[in-house]
Length: 107
Image 1 (cartoon, one colour):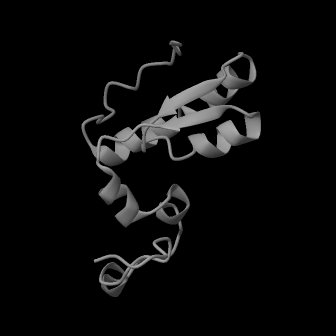
Image 2 (cartoon, one colour):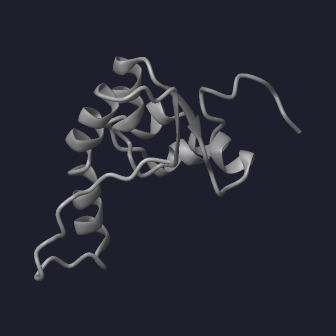
Image 3 (tube, one colour):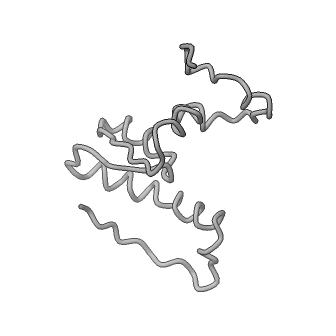
């Protein structure tokens, strides 16, 4: 395990609000990137929060292990990370048909 020393947020920073927590977490990207560049890390276990981590790890040749607290059917429904980070909006109709990444019939 590695410990990254980061500055504390300002006292007025509302870390209980999800958008500010996400913004604060995203500010970790340059610090973690620098750490990975200067270390001999072979792999990282990560969850969905650092959406930028797969890109950074791939550029640096670091292997990733995705940890999920939801079951496989939920992950299959929402699709691979590349689908979840697309900039287009999904319509309600998109959720009524089989996703394009499920290319087989099921009962």
